[in-house]
Image (cartoon, rainbow, N blue to C red; front, side, top):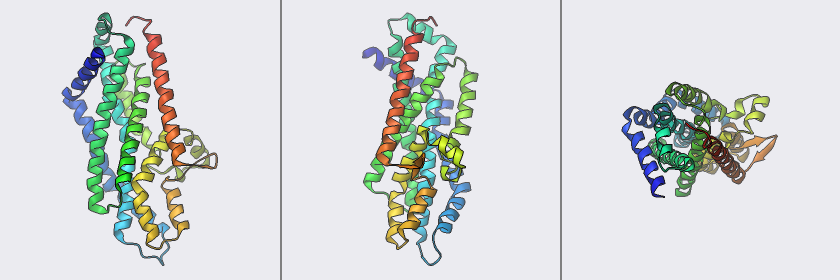
Length: 299
C-alpha cells in the first residue's frame, strides 16, 4: 500500500507540476461553458419556447433554468471523459521517457503501477470536473436555480461514475500509445468527436433513426442522459407546476434526451446507472487483462 500511495502521489504531483497540462485541463471546461452560453444558449432557448403552446405563459426564469441545465449537463458530459484523457498523459509520458521501464526494475509490480496511474487520473479528473460543476452552479444561480440538494448530490454521483468511465476508457486506449504525438492525436479526436456521439453537442433525439439506434448502445449516451435528468429535473417540475400540460413537458424531456430509448424501449434512470456501472467494470477488467499480458514483456 505504501508503494501504491507513493505512485499516486507522484503521478498527481507530476500532473499539477506540468502547468500546461493542468491549465489546459482546468480551463477547457470553463472555455466550453463560455462557448456554450455564447453560441448555444439562444438556440436552446428557442427550442424550448417553440415547444410550449402560445396560450401558456412561462416565466423567463424557468426557461433560462432549462437552458442552463442543458448547458451544464453538456459541459459535464464532455469534460468527464476528455479531461480524463488529458490527466492520463502521465502514463504515456513515462513510456516515452523510459520512466516506466526504470520503475519496473524497482520492486514495483506492474499491476500496482497500473493502479497508481488509474487512481491518480481519477482523482485529478474528478477534481477538475467538480470545480467545473461549481462554476456551473454559479451560472445556474445567476439565470434561474431550481435544483434541490438531492439533485446536486445526484449530479456529483454522475460525475463520479462518468469520470470513472472516462478514466477506464483512457487507460485502455492509452495502454497502446507510447509517444506524446500519439496521445495528442487521440486527445484531439476524443475532444472533437465525443461530444457528438454522447449527445452533448446535439441531442440524440435530433439524429436519424439508424444513428439513434447505434448510439443507444454506447454508455456515454446514458452518462449525458443522467446529467440531463438531474440538472434539469427541478426546472421541468417547475414548468409542469406553471400549468404546462404533462404531454408538452414529456415531449421536452424527449427533445433534450432526458428520456433515452434503446430499440424503442425507454431506459429508466436505474437502468442508465446500471449500464454505466457495468461499462466501468468491463473497461477496468479489460485494462487489468492488458496489464497482466504486458507485464510478461519487457518495456
